[in-house]
Length: 620
Image 1 (cartoon, rainbow, N blue to C red):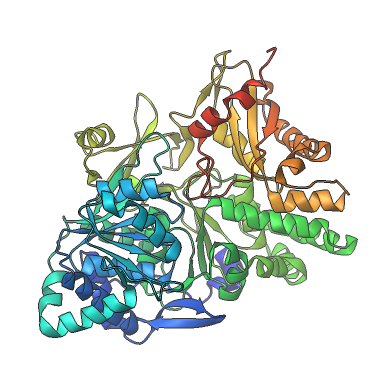
Image 2 (cartoon, rainbow, N blue to C red):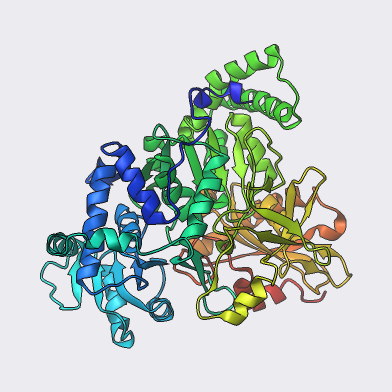
């Protein structure tokens, strides 16, 4: 199908490799090779500012030497508490170039969490984005005796603030320049002080079942994962990438920032999490990685726009997407697309599909990447019908974002692809749990040898906790998390993620948690899509005063029931959902119910909303 995509023309068939077995080696070899080419872009006061590789290298060196001036030594840990901004990448590479270990902290974390993560990682220098994050750091500083200095990226509102334990990033860079002149040769010694087996980064799990665990990744593991990830989807300096997911999450770190370091693709930073939809249209990335929540949101926006379109526009879109779906089915079946259908598809793109792609901002994309959570196969087929292949991958924090991959010419929606090159993936014969082995597997959990032993067995297999199947051609499917499989009171095994993905395909449903373990039937807690449901209420003259009142209106209850009825028709009677309840509070990443990647925490939600769940089983 690639010959049907104009975005795929004249693009790389392979990625020119970089030498190096540590992140500093790879980065500095890239700086030397790419010089004045653009590496990163950010929007400043409404204008896009570019960072060349050379300019980035200067900043990284100054920050690294600034750390050395503060007494930071090889093997020490520094943490970053910030949103996804250019400074995050500068500081991350600088910490490792100084021989240190980088630990990322979600900007939505509370002060108590900041304290735990800094204490557990033995953080000696803490980088914070702005005044808001500085306040968190200062509130717990007295409880962190190892913390030597707090470094602030953005000093807006802090110009009169004085504290000997706090320094601006600009001042740290100035300190680094002076220290570099006074200690010639020190920088080269520091950046060469770490080897492939040494610890490079800490990535803390979300901690949905207890305290977060610090997954330790070596430099060699990072280098291996970078090479393997780029190998199956070649990229180069002509590619435009977007960076907007949390950089302390392994997915954006590896698939976004680090892959750009290795491939030379331009890394574009969005202004803030609320401007993603606007910025993607400006950037028009050629390869776009996002979590299912984002892809669902884009689809919902198109679905609502089509409902508001004129009858002629609706008819045109319906015909065009139908043609796209026929092409997609041919491609998925590995059947040739005949000339007549190709011609119709060209017309379909000209009449409607190109406009839909431009509305989303994916008109230049030759591949969409999805991962970090399950996604509906129907959603993948919809994007493919627009003319853009969506590639689903599967991995974990502990496997350095590398496990299975879907190749552009081997699309199979509903599967997670085959094992990546150099990575072994198999099923446990007793439990059907997916196991991973390879250089990408982490070193273990920091300060938790027992948890490490429970996760990596004596033969080096990482036990992922995901249950699945594999076919004769090596394509894996995830059925669910081992701990999430529902066994009803009647003994029926249910995989809730399949039902949940179908529900989330609705433009009015953002997330769902199916309930039913040891229960007589299935029920579900639903989080509505605020923007689309509010639009529905306004269009149908449904009165509401706030989010809670919106969820309680009969019209909205009927709307969600209709969406649920559509899903139930696709499943056997025993698998159908009998009742639902809407979460009445508008949730954000700061709320305990959501992970930083905006997924509902199943176990936490079931505990917090136990009374609401019980109300669906009264009299059962």
